[in-house]
Image (tube, rainbow, N blue to C red; front, side, top):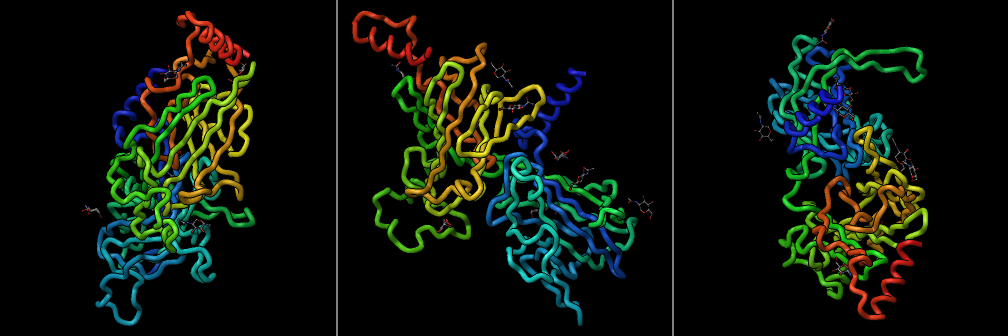
Amino acid sequence: MRFIVSGLFLFVLFCHAAAYDPLDPNGNVTIKWDIVSWTPDGYVAVVTINNFQMHRHIISPGWTLGWTWAKKEVIWSMVGAQTTEQGDCSKFKGNIPHCCKKTPTVVDLLPGVPYNQQFTNCCKGGVLPAWGQDPQAAISAFQVSVGLAGTSNKTVKLPKNFTLLGPGPGYTCGPAKVVPSTTFLTPDRRRKTQALMTWNVTCTYSQFLARKNPNCCVSFSSFYNETITPCPSCACGCQNKISCVKSDSKILKMVGVNTPRKDNAPLLKCTHHMCPVRVHWHVKLNYKEYWRVKVSITNFNYRMNYTLWSLVVQHPNLNNVTQVFSFDYKPLVPYESINDTGIFYGMKYYNDLLMEAGPFGNVQSELLLQKDKDTFTFKQGWAFPRKVYFNGDECMLPPPDTYPFLPNSANQDLFSITTFIAAMLLLLVAFW
Ligand SMILES: *[C@@H]1O[C@H](CO)[C@@H](O)[C@H](O)[C@H]1NC(C)=O
Ligand SMILES: *[C@@H]1O[C@H](CO)[C@@H](O)[C@H](O)[C@H]1NC(C)=O
Ligand SMILES: *[C@@H]1O[C@H](CO)[C@@H](O)[C@H](O)[C@H]1NC(C)=O
Ligand SMILES: *[C@@H]1O[C@H](CO)[C@@H](O)[C@H](O)[C@H]1NC(C)=O
Ligand SMILES: *[C@@H]1O[C@H](CO)[C@@H](O)[C@H](O)[C@H]1NC(C)=O
Ligand SMILES: *[C@@H]1O[C@H](CO)[C@@H](O)[C@H](O)[C@H]1NC(C)=O
Ligand SMILES: *[C@@H]1O[C@H](CO)[C@@H](O)[C@H](O)[C@H]1NC(C)=O
Ligand SMILES: *[C@@H]1O[C@H](CO)[C@@H](O)[C@H](O)[C@H]1NC(C)=O
């Protein structure tokens, strides 16, 4: 059985190498169409978007969903979402469709639209939290009335070529597949109804499709060595270096400097790594049974607020997190046998907003971890994370040979009294 499972695992790994996140092997966004009624010339469907990803949310300005109609279908009306363009409806007289395009592009409505345009789970500006963070809220839905379409489950042709922007590129969607019809419970839970026909589309994310360079980097420090290991130079590509802003620049006093652009182009503070986000991991204290880490996240983009940010960390001691002081924490267990990964979120109304670059553009917390005597060590960079993801994208780590080093007393040449004293002090700190 084990062999079959690991064989399958490898098969999946190699088949979907481009869209594979080892920390969230089943992560996907599923788009479900439920036909709820037939009409004289087509059907009414409820379209539900579920973000089943553990740690990747869809941030503002939200999702954009597209597809290609199989025949000459039109959209008569939509509730809870809208198409961005109507297209050419000139051949219609009297009733004019909402959209006549062969490839409609749909976006969510903004919060606060009038009641008659709302639909259950709609109108969030397309923003969806990750499943791991808030499964109840990781859902978006709208209703669409389709004309010039099939009017039975034998004549309906499934839409093709689904595309999802979340909000930028990165998602690849498979073909629509007819699945067993969804059943719905009435609000009083006393009656079950059933969709007339249901199909699903599954979209998966690949960081390589999303962007050429990482979006964040990691730096390290420790109490046992004063070296600070910085982010690698140009970790996020240095193409924005020409337009970056020095911290004393006059631009920063200008009105509108923080206004986001339509194309989401960043305005970065000049740094040697040129990343919009840096995660710093500081090994702060060593107790007998526990050790303590301080994590800080810094935003270097003057045009971006990260609402509902998430941080995923892989470290072998995360199976023994005793306390996380100012972030929310959830273990992420992608494989039943390994428990070395966790997600950190901001606390609601306290630090769930990572503000634009500047004096408030950072969030931080400390973690207390219980030592497992068999594995715990400060040697060879063991105390630093193996992988770090910010908002679902993997961050670049420094090369291992630059990690802060534990002075190794056994190999130390104690020829002078000063190094001897220094070593004793460090030993005291390390083993207390
Ligand atoms: C999508 O994600 C859900 C939740 O993790 C999982 O149950 C489902 O099998 C996934 N679908 C595909 C096609 O991978
Ligand atoms: C279709 O999608 C829904 C979620 O929207 C999911 O619950 C269901 O399991 C999916 N069906 C299949 C066969 O993947
Ligand atoms: C699918 O959509 C993409 C982007 O909209 C387009 O470039 C491509 O030609 C489409 N493919 C088909 C088969 O319609
Ligand atoms: C179509 O509807 C018939 C009965 O109305 C049902 O037996 C059949 O399973 C349905 N087919 C699909 C693909 O939903
Ligand atoms: C970030 O949020 C603050 C407070 O809500 C707001 O004043 C600021 O304009 C926002 N900045 C960006 C880049 O959206
Ligand atoms: C994983 O570790 C956390 C502590 O960080 C613990 O609360 C949780 O129960 C563990 N889960 C499993 C499946 O071992
Ligand atoms: C946490 O560490 C203690 C002490 O080493 C160990 O007994 C316990 O099994 C660990 N907990 C987990 C979930 O690994
Ligand atoms: C601190 O770490 C750096 C980088 O790994 C290393 O070069 C240096 O020797 C270490 N300092 C001590 C006192 O061990």
